[in-house]
Image (cartoon, rainbow, N blue to C red; front, side, top):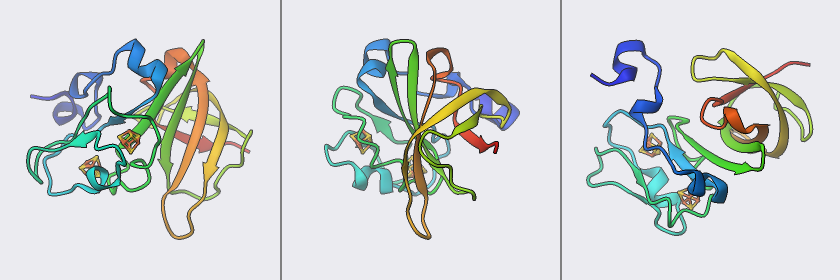
Length: 156
Ligand code: SF4
Ligand code: SF4
C-alpha cells in the first residue's frame, strides 16, 4: 500500500524523486498519485517533458528534458505540480496558489509542508497573478526544505 493511501498525505516514497543535479537545474515534480483521466500538464509542456502511457496513467517527467519553465504548474487541476530548483543553500519552489490574499514579491510568508504544518519561513520571489485562475508563486526557502514545502500561508 502506498504511503498516501495509509495517511492521506503524499510521502516521498510515492514520488518520482529527482537527483541533486536535476534539482540544481530546476525541474517539475508531479505529486499526482491517483490514476484519473487528466492530462493538461502534458499539453502545457513546450518541450514534451511530461508523458503518460494512457489518459488514466500517472504523468512521468523526463528530468533531462524539463527546463523548469513552470508552465505546467498553473494548469494542473489537482494543484499537484511544483517546480523545485536549488541554488547554494537555498531552494526556489514554484507552486500553485488559490487563496486570498495573494502575497506580493519579497513578502515573508509561512512555508507549509504537505500536511499544512509550518515548516519554516519563505520569501516570495515571483507572483504570476491570473484573474479567476490559479496564481503561480515562487518562494525561496532553505535548501533542506526543498522536498518538504508545498504550500504557503500569508502571515501579515
Ligand atoms: S516545468 Fe516546463 S519544461 Fe518542465 S515539465 Fe513543466 S512545462 Fe514542461
Ligand atoms: S494535470 Fe495535474 S492532476 Fe492532471 S495528470 Fe497532470 S499532474 Fe496529474
